[in-house]
Length: 321
Image (spheres, rainbow, N blue to C red):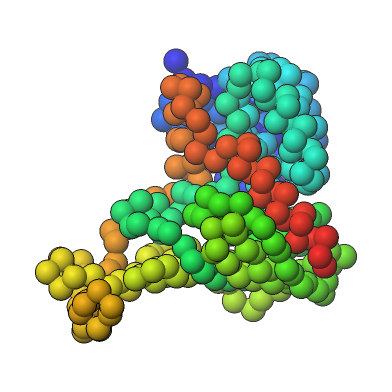
């Protein structure tokens, strides 16, 4: 039997989710929820679903995708969990950390799958890191985007930087011990550009820059660690790494030797490595992961706890501005 799905919110991301759920194997899109009747009915008709104005109006489904504005995530998630729905919540999971903690408490007694839409975890470049040993000492990330009127109910930190906050927490697996930040409100009432320096108990330091008033988009991350440097272009989904390895270990099928360098451990070869990257639709992949967790009971690929921690660090940055 297919898993029945409702999409709550038909803005930019909600419409994408609806389109992809329509074609997702093992799922059946049955309901679209949006208080805007004209838009809600149009999206529902396009993808063969039924429109409802509110979550309480629709019949029971197996799972929901919450893609409404962030300020509504808390109330919608609580209501969906009360009704027994497995719940996918777009990022950021909530507008505040306290709201995320509230959902965590509710989720502990509902036994429902909750996954959060930190879609960069499913980016082909990030997924390619599975073949690379990662132990970061320094991380630098730039996430720049042209101004768009949507998503201005939150600052650039919760809108864009939250992606990289989640990624560095996932990459380091270490406690944040200090944060420094600066930011400016330019076109909106909240910060439109921000730079944050985040220090971890492991000794790793991350420098993040996010802007939603850039002339050109950029989504890049660089990871520096002992004997290697990894460059990820999240926009193109590509990865390139520079590594020091034993000359006898060079694999010319995917590594290009650049020369040797003397180290305290002897001469090493510098190679450029380009791990294989599989082209996928990241949102469709996170939907498949959500379905898999529902069917098997496996932990979500992006847990509510992880998403709450990303919001906590985002709030820490906000307090410094």
